[in-house]
Length: 98
Image (cartoon, rainbow, N blue to C red):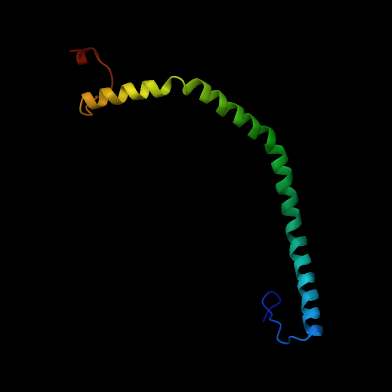
């Protein structure tokens, strides 16, 4: 068995204490190995915070522009599509006028 899966084969207090401290050492090694990546992640998150704030601001501005007007436009377009049985053509041209 390896260090990460070694079972406590003896349930004596002495063997369980020994296993506990082996596992504690292993845990510390694993955390030490991942520490530089965690530090880099924190630094990136700190640098991203202003960008994420700006994205939230832009999203709010987009909603202010679209929300009051776009639903009515989409609703009217849907009515026209249904009236034309889905045949709305490719685009406007002077020959389409009836």
